[in-house]
Image (cartoon, rainbow, N blue to C red; front, side, top):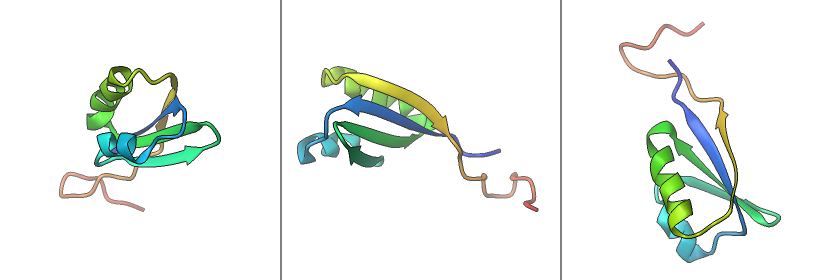
Length: 77
């Protein structure tokens, strides 16, 4: 099973202070928006922070995840 990763975007470019609120996530800024990449288990917390800061949510999407690793993962190939 693949690890689920989400991209959550909001309006505006995150300041260094705002970036600090998303520890453990990857942030990418573009023209007038910020994208937060997070694992499935962090999605609820990311959404809560966006709401808490009064940010305008633009999009939430599931992106391709990495294959799971470990003894229960199916063999690759």
